[in-house]
Amino acid sequence: MSRPVAIASRWGAGAWCTALHAVAAAAPWTAETPLPHGLAGHAAAVHEGRLNVAGGSHWSGETKRIENAVYRRTLRGAEAGRWETLPPLPAGFAHSASATGAGALWLVGGATDAIQRLDLATGAARRIGALPERRTYAGAAFAAGAVWVVGGTPVDTDFSAALATMVRIDAGTGAVTPAPAGPAWINPVVLALGDELHVLPGSRWSAERRRLEAPRETWIYSLSGGQWTQRPLAASLPRGLSGVALDRYRALLVGGVPADNAGAGPIARDVWLYDGRTGVLQPQPPLPAPRLAAALVHEGGEVWLVGGEERSRGRADTVWRWTPPAEGAP
Image (cartoon, rainbow, N blue to C red):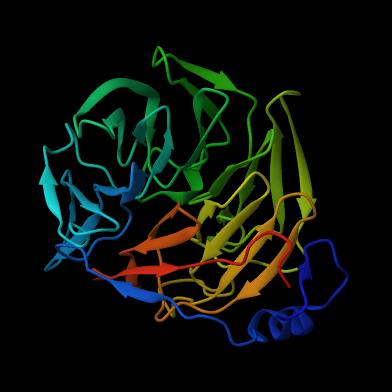
């Protein structure tokens, strides 16, 4: 395995890039039964061995379509690989905050102010409330009995309007309350690790350069202390990463768009293990193909990557499975 990359290290950009691409041979990602059709910006969750996929977007000619469809399949056994269609969401959802907890997949915003709850046992979805404002390109995680929503913008065509506000949605009552303001980022990855929320880039709007740029820090929110701290990044991560927590301290990050790309362009295949205790990034075997706005879930020691954007306006129907190294493995 290649040498870990410490976020707080003093390496230059050249050494950083060399480390990210110097990955030893390891087990590849395995292709599974594809989705009914290509999707990006959707949400996914696993419950009792069944994979649920909700919402997403695809292109029909020059029109971007927002989905309210819900699909489900069994991951293993005799029924594995057969997709079934569940009752639709009350409202379309794509490219915004989602989180799994309390037996539900929570879908927040997505060009609307809607808060939707998909019951993972019954497959029933309902709208349970509303945000103070429309919000898209936000991130979320479930922790301490609530969904925590970070970043995003109320106008999906105006990245300069990105919100620094964080809101807490109580899983029991659905009540929405403000929380200490965090980073005003677009498409942040929000991870519940231990007693903390780790918010990784993401991108921020540069008023000077009139474009999205990758931040050079991680924001960390203490759930018990109610305060934010920041940890610098030695180099920029791709914008638009997908991520999922693996255990109490580690997470997997995949794909995105290179940080130095100002517009539509090459999508990344890179994969990293992130250690929330140290900030170390460990490069892993790359994805079989580039992916942006894919859904990631972790179940039974395996990671499943579902759909995503493979090129500009190109939606993938692929489902890939991979086993990350156990904690402490070389």
